[in-house]
Image (cartoon, rainbow, N blue to C red; front, side):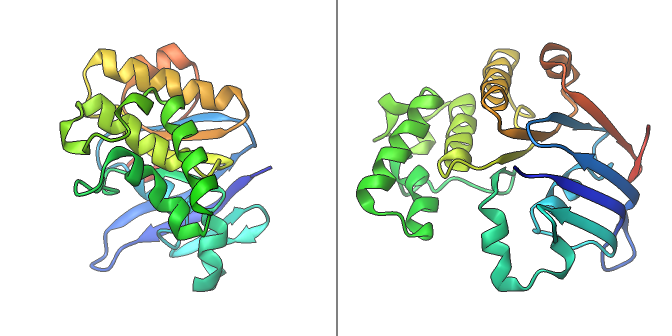
Length: 219
């Protein structure tokens, strides 16, 4: 059960850029939530605050009763175990094959090779890439690369999947595939929070919509 609550959250970057102002938002276990808004509105920053990649300048971000802003560095990896992260800057490792890319988080977490391999293949099967486990990521299409990112994000079976514009660079067919995958995860109880301006996807999946304009909640 992973509950996320932001209360009066502000985020200001060095140099004075105010990314978010006075955000109060609660996300319940098992919800499908789309964070929408124009480019630069603060969508990505909001996701990074939830995963403790960024800290709030003011206000509180509470995940499972823990105040993310006051977590000590050694507590952050334990918090992150709740999350699967699909961020645009989380690049694939092109010197490793598909299977090795998905194994990486499990290797870091200390899973045995046997259990890790079982989980990695299950994640690849879930996203339809098991038949390409020995391929290099560079040989995959854009949609396949994004599915690989999702497999890597969900291989440790997180309670929450945070995805930043996962359909942003994909054509309509690939975007629909990614949307269907996200809905399937949500249907088995994973909380899915997506930053996107893909309103076609929103119309199909019918999530709860949270709009940000200029760093503030629009509604």
